[in-house]
Image (cartoon, rainbow over all chains, first blue to last red; front, top):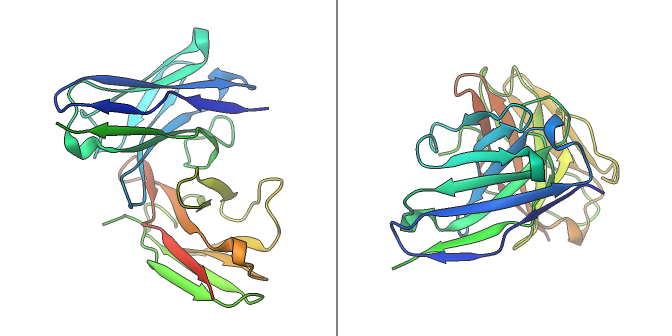
Length: 122
Length: 110
């Protein structure tokens, strides 16, 4: 069974750094793109970026370029999303999602991680 | 404002068919596949349609996807109360070189 298990909820202060994880299992980690998707409270889904774990090729949305870093560790089949300096506006649920089909960058996501709630407040 | 435009809400009675639209442009919907997701409040999105009109195994054939030009549609036939959820479309955008979502449509089953 394909599974994506994300790290737990985080409460941080503005200016702090954070790295959340998405541990995968049940498939070849290096064969599928993985995406990160943001959902702010009461809002819709936003495509943040994707990574191809085989060679760490990464594509960011212009809205998130320079604001976050997406990475992956092939040795433990885990993808990451990190911030160097959080803002209150980063408060949201962040989902990781595996692309449904191998080798394609098209946003066709399934399955999804359970989501990580990040709260940034002073 | 989302690159892909969806109506904020839709409603229909049980047993009927509802169609949710997703309007884009030549750089996204016209030239790329569209996917659709269902999300219940507080839960993870679920893939309903991929490659514009394909259903993953386990998704009922009451759900169908299509596109024409720069617009795509999700049709849900034989509506049930449990279909009440938020629905999102997504596609690759060649101009942005990235993925984009629609703003979402909240479906109410009356």
